[in-house]
Length: 150
Image 1: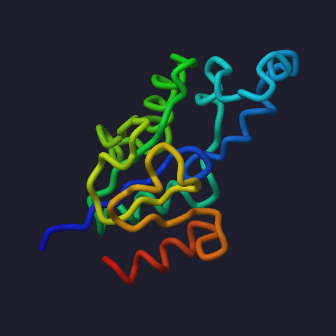
Image 2: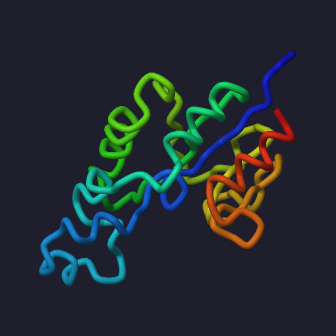
């Protein structure tokens, strides 16, 4: 039987975006106020969301699982930092499974786990699971739901 396809967003789904702020010079934060995602190498400083690594590993056993993320155009280091983050935190389980795009709706699959409907997520043809929302506040809630679909 063919596995269902699951896409998982990075920022604030796998990666806890705000964990980078304590590691950045306050003057640099002030310089980039309002567009923190353009800070050079900010994406290399972020820690995983609670339960994210274990959840991705679990999903990879039962689904054809990919990481579907967007990187800011004005921060060239974001693209390579996201690749390195995946290598560091997910290793072989996510090797060559990172897709960087500003048009998530162009990917075909059964589920997209994302915290926002941006960058085409609102037009994804499968089911959009809103991570961090009322129905799916954390990875435990997502995994309980996904267990019913494996």
